[in-house]
Length: 466
Ligand code: SAH
Ligand code: SF4
Ligand code: F3S
Image 1: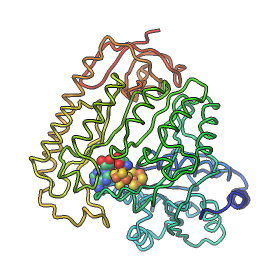
Image 2 (image 1 turned 135 degrees about the vertical axis):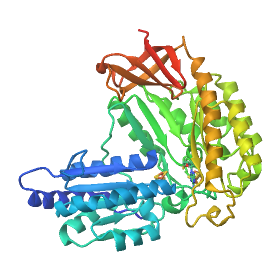
Image 3 (image 1 turned 90 degrees about the vertical axis):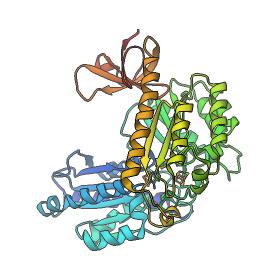
Image 4 (image 1 turned 180 degrees about the horizontal axis):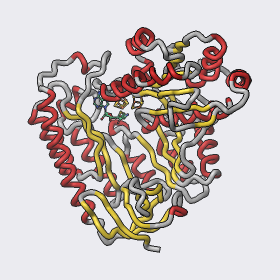
């Protein structure tokens, strides 16, 4: 494996700590870490923060007073990248006020050569850039920045890197992200992820189970297993533990907690997985199964590896073994060459399945992908009109689903106060639906029964039932 050894990671953490205590003899240096993109990136940031904490940093929410700023970036759509460029640009005046501040960029966007080049040329105040293969080298890279004052770029592609043995600083006390695999082999034609995250590799069963046990022992109430395609977990493993088996093993860990997972690819979603979900009482009754398009021709052009019929048959089976299952999905509108007729097949699919909620995206060309070279004659304004139609169709479905929840009681994990701070709490059901209700803040992080009293469009409110 191409990762540096555990001893040297620890050694460089200690060396950085020493340099920092010389640089800041009077205080603990402050770090600001912002994460873009998916939960995989959030989990990576939790590991980077674990290392920062051991180096002696404390965390802050303001860039202006920080000594170390890190953006962990996402490349999945152009919009995500534009936000990063905007926010990095905004650091320039802050850095000119505070010359000692270290600016670092990492994550998927940086793993693209043209992006790293642009940062090198146009953002000279950025001190450190490292890609997705270099997370466990972070202490070494930061050490070099602190020692040499020179800019450090580490964008090497290293096959098979599994960042094991890193300390983790979890953002929540009651919810935990648990990566079970990294990378992706699917090469959906629109998607940049396989290019920036490398080939699929699964963590060892024993490592995943050890982390799950440690998470449960720390009092966490919800574990989300992460991977771009969790269904291909363990494909090459010698112990024969595939994803359904892994779910069963984690379900066997004693304790009052729920298990979630994402993302599950329909191509590799099996009856075996759905049966395991149905059998495991700790696995939430929620399946996020991205379909992307309702048209077979578009699915083929996307290289998704399943048909509309296969997708619908999976949904039918899932509902036959778990009648109360909540389904969510991802959809892309305006894939190159998609016609309005084909888009209407996406609309009909969402009306047929009646998803709890959807993540909807307008296609964004990604440099280096197959789809970026395909003819794309439909103007953006037209795609935007289709997008609005998709949103209103889903809002109709969601409003009906919400209305039918009134009067029912759900067990929710109380997640926090609502943004308005009006004495209301917000909790999430097993099916991943939010319910707001009045209650004391001491309930945050606990499970409670909440009765739904009102549905306003697709927002549920209720009251404590116990
Ligand atoms: N591995 C997951 C998806 C990860 S990316 C899966 O296969 O389901 C999350 C979502 O972003 C995708 O499901 C897709 O809907 C969307 N997406 C990815 N690339 C995109 C692109 N180039 N343009 C628009 N949406 C995209
Ligand atoms: Fe991208 Fe497809 Fe891999 Fe998901 S499965 S990360 S959409 S290539
Ligand atoms: Fe974005 Fe990378 Fe995740 S491209 S969606 S942060 S894997």
